[in-house]
Image (cartoon, rainbow, N blue to C red; front, side, top):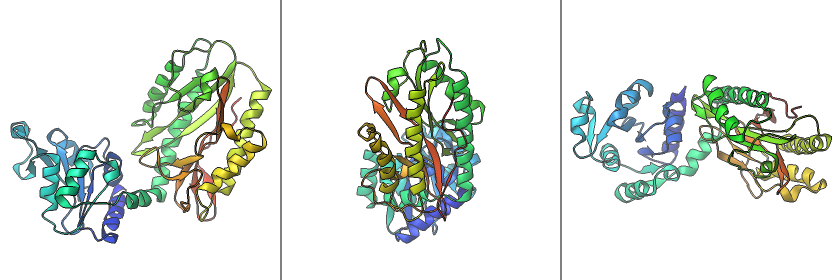
Length: 370
């Protein structure tokens, strides 16, 4: 399946008149090959062949995992030849990563493109100076933002893992448990369900910590009834997911439940505005209008959502001022919330696919947990 993504990147190169497209970003290499935690670089060239350059120790893993049409070579820095470990001589490229890339690219003269937004600054500068590489990051972002059906299925598979982990964490809420314990358990739950990893450090927040949108879990323990916010996601088969739920632990609190319902109303208003042709600021505006009627809009201090794919944050971004036009195949989070400093916060987040006629919510878990 990942060969299809590799072809998309070749199309980017063709459209920009490039002889070679150099990929440095791990996400972009995973996108093109399906390889987990890749190292090195991938040079994409329809006319001269695709070459993946990896450190010696990663050669045989890459050979086994990347598409067969991609040639794998190992770059060797000074003195490393003695560490070759059975790598054939023909697949050794002496030099640093930059030097190895240059040797591969120079076989195929012409314009060179580079995913500069993902590369280390020193590497990007060296390639720009040596090869005259052009930054084509925006075109890669754009191409990646439109998902094919098989990519949506992988995102849904990752989301099902996240949903099951969320259920297990909610079940694990009990007196004495700490934020740190639950955050640690989330990763274990997701890995048991086949995830490569958690998509980002899981957020578990109790009581006043729910008012911190990017709270880092602490040793705070559940004692008295109060609010709980959990934000987690998984990465499985290269694709990410994102899910947030807020609830009241320890009985029922009708006033707090009503506040969750306000956020759900804001979320639904935003979802209803999502469709091909809409601009990315419009769903964000709809959510803010709902919160404004309740005097809460001033406490909604982040954008409505973001694209999800081979990275947890990618194009498009649903936020004020964004003129990005939504298109069929984009997958976005919709996560309105409000955060009252020192008191509590509420956020509800789901994944939404933009379809030819509107949208489809990919998340299956109930928004209001009781």
